[in-house]
Length: 431
Image 1 (cartoon, rainbow, N blue to C red):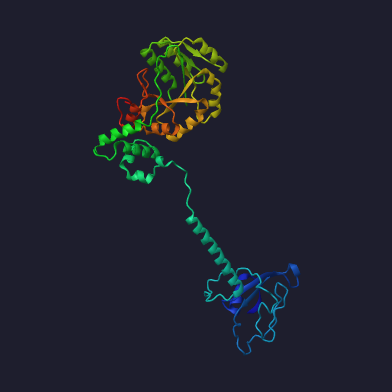
Image 2 (cartoon, helix red, strand yellow):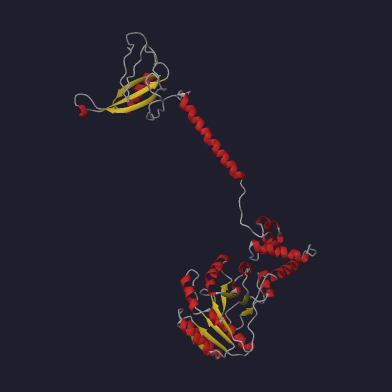
């Protein structure tokens, strides 16, 4: 390797000197700024460039213009760089174990592309060996990832349903179109197959009938209100805002009076909503029923005792947002377990399944006895009712399908629920 030091006023002129002297394949070993001359540190700075080339320097000829061989400047490491005995300079001759660090040279667009990298083979071989080790390690890890099975959540085999199977099964596709989720749709399809065996009659009507029967077998319902001599029933309606609790209270009271003619009392703890108390009092005046307003938890026991001779006590509560768990827990002071209350959670059939699950989870602080689904007349697909019932296993007591009192309320039965789900265009039950 031949090494030479150049001085220039800037990098551009210095690179030009290196190229003219050593050719386009020259390597820049180091650069530094020098200040000298008569003015010392105040003098104009110059740029010192140390460059090298593996081949011999360009022959300048032997004539009068030939440049004499001359010693080079000391390199930045302090070693004297000079050719002795006409031997080429190498890193070993300079007393160095490895090349000096050098700054990356500026790209020269006029320089011809290098034909061969003539760097020291020992460091290059070491780097190639390290790269090969890294690549082999990564390949081994990727192979392990490919061979490791992906763990899935455990599902009982009889209840597992794959979406790929649903895409191929016309029965499952029909159930999905009615609002059932994949798991419940697969379960209903298997129940249907167990009941009817191989399908002999392929008509749509027969299929719908068989599916309705299978759906009905999955429902658990609560017994409707009835007269029980000597036993008082206390029923409380809870739920989020806007699901129709107060109107449903009026429907239950009117329907009970029409069927059994017993004594009914109304109690409300909804003192938050504007005109909530007045709305219930209006219903009480129309049906000639007493209405109690409970402002504090300590007043609930006395209110229940005052109507101890009634057959049915219906309790209206304030709507609470599922996102406000503290307010829902505060209702526990009013609705204590020792009062013997049946808490019926009202859910709107128009809500999405994930929202209904959140409501159920938040109101579970109050010990839910049954579900009441409202607004079934406003929802075209009612498969969500079965989805929620299947995931929570809570009996369904009533359905409401309008604002009329007392007409728009239905005592839930498996047959009615199955018909509502399989009839997306409305029926006598849901308008």
